[in-house]
Length: 162
Image (cartoon, rainbow, N blue to C red; front, side, top):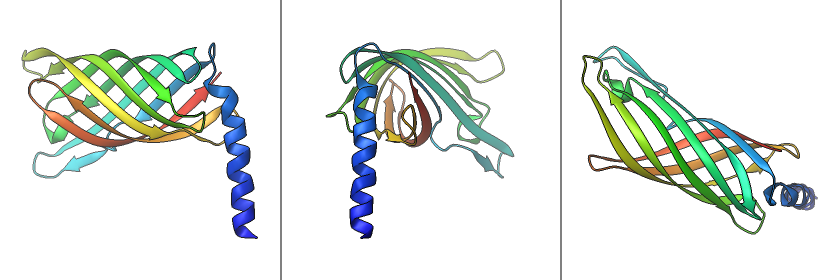
């Protein structure tokens, strides 16, 4: 009986999701990046990251997104990183699984008049789990690379589909 109830629930969620990835729909996706809320007792610094993506579906299952993010005290150091970029997502078969890619401009600020601007490329894979017809919780794994570093991480966000 539990398996049948689970199957019916998944079917309802999948049917509700089908209309959300169509051409002309809008998406807003704020998230906590990297699950980076941490405190380093050695440096007495707390790290925290946020990001937001927003955009529109240009074709069925394909969204064009604008991306903005910030990470304060990255890695427990005095480094703050501010990010702006553009990218896209492809949603597989209207079930919520997606792959995304973006190109970003990152502003690295070390505080003492030491700033640097770098370009980075990011990839992500995640799942849009529909809580209601228009609201999702979106866990994802991401990879970001520039000429100095490569970073893997996890993030959790909410999606709002209009």
